[in-house]
Length: 417
Image 1: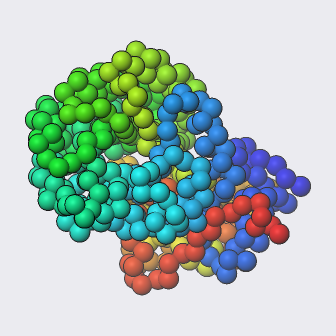
Image 2: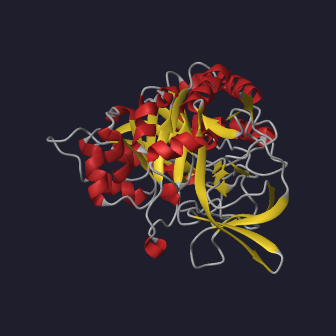
């Protein structure tokens, strides 16, 4: 018997089979057993496909979808996305190597981020990857790699505008920033590009991330396109590519409301129509990471011990903050709040007690959930942490205390066979 996980926030796409959380139609107990145990990250392929389809339906047809590899660079996930998104955005040569390993075309890859090493710049130029320039100094360094033996370096300027995307989880623009080139300095660098042996590709503008306020996301569109139009008029050539950081967030906590994607897509289309003239044939890409993969992932850890300390119940698991720093609250939360959690093999049982879920590390920071209402769990039960598809394993201190790393698996319906 199967049903949807309707009682958990943001979990409507997951199902339960015979009291057990299921991904791809398979109970997680079976998936864990076949994978060899816990801790493990599971990513639901059907949920990824659904999210991509929702985006294609809601956004203007001319908008390309780019995946920000930093959100989750799991090889099987990248291979799956390579045939479904229009491009990738990377932040290191290591991410480039992962994409090359799954056959992603270099001309579909752009490389952003401050502090690119010379060897990273050289590698990107060698493979024809577009470099998103973060400073005047970086522009000059890229030019030194121009050579008759190499492809002409392809560059786009990342802009730090004089406005910000309000209410973002992380502010990536506005005011002083290590990211991008201050908007008022961009015209000077556009003139400099014209004097260097470089191929101008366009612009990159990433104003903020993890934003759930649809009205603010829409409000930011007009100044973004107005700025791009003004700079396009001063460019040394046509703006071939424009990469926009969408900033679309996903709900993690009680009271969070998901982004109204149809409303955002409609406003984006209207904004494109108003600014069609200066952009001409520009290929516009929306860079998304967390919004594509975040809700498709579940982190599972097994209860090793159940203990009571002065009246408080602790479920001690074999996973923790070394695998999932974000769930512990130590990846940017000012006030700690719990990710959605459940006892994955007791989904049909009501909550009976208040417990804290902790890991095996020797630090009080190692908490996956604090004072949550759950069914009574015993050693051997599985704890599921939802909203774990982005900024999980590779954003965590996996070498802390030298515990083994968790497993990862992309789950498709074929997994059942």
